[in-house]
Figure 1 (cartoon, rainbow, N blue to C red):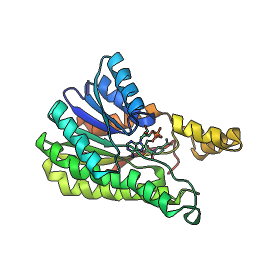
Figure 2 (figure 1 turned 120 degrees about the vertical axis):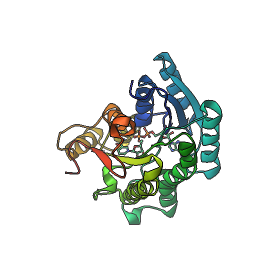
Figure 3 (figure 1 turned 90 degrees about the horizontal axis):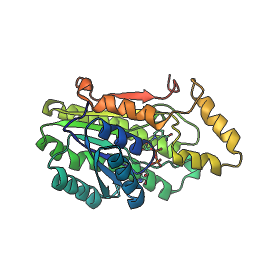
Amino acid sequence: MKLAGKVALITGAGAGIGQETARLFAKEGASVVVVDRNAETATETVKLIEAEGGKALSVIADVASSASVRAMFQSTQEAFGALHILFNNAGIVVQGRVEDSSEEDWNAQIGTTLTSVFLGCKYGIPLLRASGGGVILNMASVAGMMGIVDRAVYSAAKGGVIGLTRAVALDHAKEGIRCVYLAPATIETPSLRDRIEASPDPAAARKAFESRQPVGRLGTPSDVAYAALYLVSDEASFVTGSGLTVDGGMAV
Ligand SMILES: NC(=O)c1ccc[n+]([C@@H]2O[C@H](COP(=O)([O-])OP(=O)(O)OC[C@H]3O[C@@H](n4cnc5c(N)ncnc54)[C@H](O)[C@@H]3O)[C@@H](O)[C@H]2O)c1
């Protein structure tokens, strides 16, 4: 097992990529702190992990709130006494051009997707350090690396995540704390399926998403979870400040 004896905290682990990654990390021996703002889905993830023989704890938190993030690390410390892997994964998608996006959209997108990563790093680093070092994995997106139509505010937040990752990696390289990012293209999660179904022509919307990736299909949460596993494992101990695109060739 690649993560035996490790404590891993994953935000947004009640659904989609976060849930799949939480299950994989637990199968690889980690004790997983399942963080989500949705108590019901966080509990569901914990039940899935326990049914698969793993160890997990659900913690309800809003990653955009400083007090909530600090309480999340406090709960981790009380339950497991350490933290080795922090996956800042939770995020939302605001669609549209700049002029279509309200200031509320901007604040919600930046709060949940970028401020959350800042807070996770800020309050997580002391616990990682006290645990003898570890790794922070931040969820970016190909939208943070390249222009994508109708994703102005989302792209800004994800570009910020990549910049923050590089800076944190340099600042903490000598302390045994790595910081890396993931940049997926379109991944078929339940929330993406809902977005496709809500569009005026779901079949056309699906086809448009699929055709953006040169490999001609959507990614799966499992495609991303295995990339995450590599980045947080000791096999990636020489990897910091950089990221892995999991994008079917989209950013090429
Ligand atoms: N699905 C994709 O196509 C895709 C592509 C690239 C990047 N990403 C990124 O991957 C991450 C996960 O995406 P997903 O598709 O699995 O999402 P999802 O919507 O399926 O799941 C996100 C989870 O995060 C939780 N969450 C949202 N806001 C929160 C908050 N403020 N505090 C705590 N929990 C919160 C939700 O309750 C949900 O359980 C996001 O950062 C997203 O931007 C997704």
